[in-house]
Amino acid sequence: MNFIDVSVGILLNDTKVLLGKRPKTKPWAGWWEFPGGKINSGETANDALIRELKEELGITVTSSEPWMIRTHHFNNQPIRLHFFKINSWQKSPIALEHDELKWVEIESPKVEPLLPANQMIFQSLQLPSIYAITNMTEFHGNFFSLLERKIKSEINLIQIRERLLDQNELEIFSKKVLHLARQHKIKVLINANLELAKKIKADGVHLNSKQIYENITIPEEMIIGASCHSIEDLKQAEARKYNFALLSPVKKTLTHPSIDPMGWKSFQEIINQVQIPVYALGGMACSDIPNAFESGAVGIAAQRAIWT
Image (tube, rainbow, N blue to C red; front, side, top):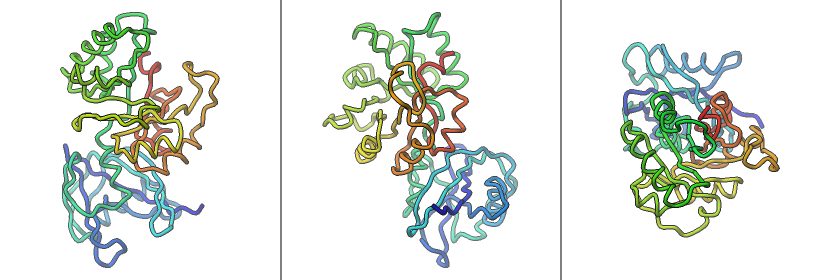
């Protein structure tokens, strides 16, 4: 498949990002997009990013980091989008090629219409690159001391999943995690137990691959994650407008050693068929984050490596 490779810049300004309105002279005129453009022959994605943002916005990028690579189709032409998060630049952006520029809130981008390839990006920008799954029953030591250190350094989203605890123990454990997380404004989801999530006022619930097909009424304010193992599962999670999904196993796992992992190539092919943020799960460590980004994921989910 012959892709056109495009570099896309996401200029971050506190809780806002910059969008440009496509001019009347270009396809999709009047639609809003993140700035960027085609990667020319001989250019790296970063080279193209710097050149395009100079041409489109008149700025000089001084700090950027590679983020997700996603594929999309425009008028039957496959496009590979190399997204970059841009943290600093010189000069104020001006509309040199767009009809208009606008800073919009990440959580509520009130502009229409938005290019289809960019709609999922706003959901993804609200998610961290690490989704930590608790594993207290396998940890030897003071788990809550470790949890506090991790929260202060690298964790911003937690799923409580402790299958060896009984209901009373799980509730006590979950309340402790939630209390600690709230002190640092960290979101907490409860695995497969909506009633407990509601009872302790957790931020959301993480549904297993069976629950995503059930008719479960979930409070509108709750974050919903979904465990998926196939393209059918992901399409179900997408159709139900869940906040994000996990796809597994990418690599061999201790939990399910007899299951063959899908590998990064299959993972990438599957998740690029849907427009829902996806975490890679299964044998993941922080060193896998670049591979996850390159494969189109928002990051990794980890149950063991994150606690070492």
